[in-house]
Length: 119
Length: 358
Length: 134
Image (tube, rainbow over all chains, first blue to last red; front, side, top):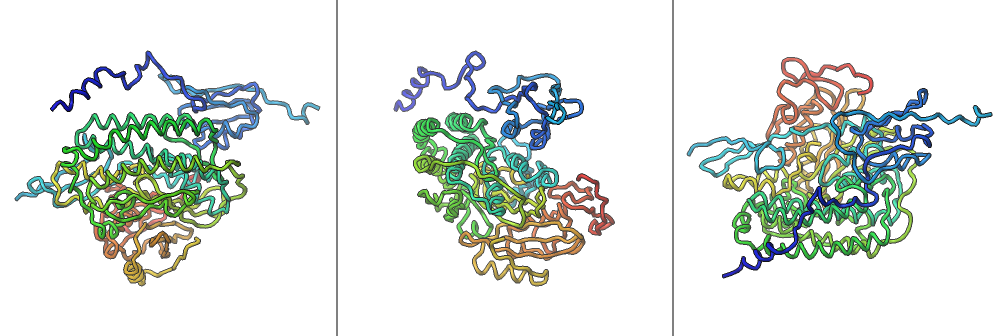
């Protein structure tokens, strides 16, 4: 007769199945592909990342030495990170916080002199 | 008796997929069903003109939001066969581990939605609680919860360490225990049986004739599972397709439930037998020729036709997803049903309209 | 392809498909490839015991092809899709959506190839100028 009572008591006194987010947040796992960052000082503007990107969200302009990235077109696949020749691209563990306007990220780098120019 | 035509979908509180059905109803019993598609057609096959064959992997992953890894795997397998690239054995086993984790998450999702379709919301939440653990496994091992982006032409993009493999095994023990706890609620409950037994019957002959695939066909007695082809190292594992003979919604949900256990078993076998070695072979050159590739998605047989002509863009890519093959079978299941059975029957084929209309 | 591909002509198509059905093959799908010079190849894929078998039919812009849906009912859906996307007409389709399965009623272009259908019967093809980059 009392088939539901043990289940009800168990449900009343067992810990909650869900986390009390945002007061309690889980630290993201290692290797999560979050927001993309570029250490522009080490970037050689080779534009391999722009060539390999599936959603074409990176544009590299060698003449003005700018690296332009649209975080709203990016699919966070990490192919640019794998392909980067200087290893200056990396992905953080957390996603980008919400913003109210879509703005691309524009970074100004220094075009490294080729050995021919240095001489 | 008056005939009424009731439009069902694409927006409906119980229907989760944008499928439109014109149901001819006589006194609450359905006499005819006529589908309309095209609400979510994105023309992804035409993106071969603008993306090269490496970038297409990311496009193909986004055809479906539930079984995305299988699309990428089928595409990569097709191109590897076309270009004659040998995938290292470790990469094959890693692909099996991730694709069986994908099958687990997809079946758990479906079981939850199925319970929701006849109003059993608490069972829906319980299945999705287990699914969260599987998605945590995906996230920790590959970097993302569902669109895992681990496939590359020639292998996989990331490796799994011994600690990660042991952690997967430990978490799967918890998953298995929780699934066993829900088994009697799903399969022996009086209300669940009343809503699903005898509904949406598909006989074995009709399933073969209409080209049904996946658990829809296996619930009707056809032992047809593309994993029997033995692709990607599955031929080195013990595998038997799960078959039920009744052909109704209850049989199909039983097939998918038993496939949960089968996936956990396949992952354990793959982790036990995984060899050491490299995970990716270098790809040189461009593809040429035509090829057909097939794998077993959670919903059935996925078919890819690829044609290339030695340029960096493919010439043609054709995707035939399992829901596309199951829609004629759905249309034969609906006549004779009550109007209130329509959501249950439509959901029992596991529709994924974004796959169907890519 | 590594499996056998048989080329058929449109008058022998339905007979060949009926023979394949009697031999116990399951219908998988159809693929349409738009080639140069307004020629289309329609591939029919069948499966038995996990072995694929293919038929290839060459057709040109504006011509009509006999439908195999009287033999395999499940083919009606993919033939309607090819009608919508490539503009090829199929004769004696079991259920004919008349090019409204994916496209709306008034749409005149065929999305997957380079011509549009114009004219009063919407079947007379007119070459569409190709835009570079599309």
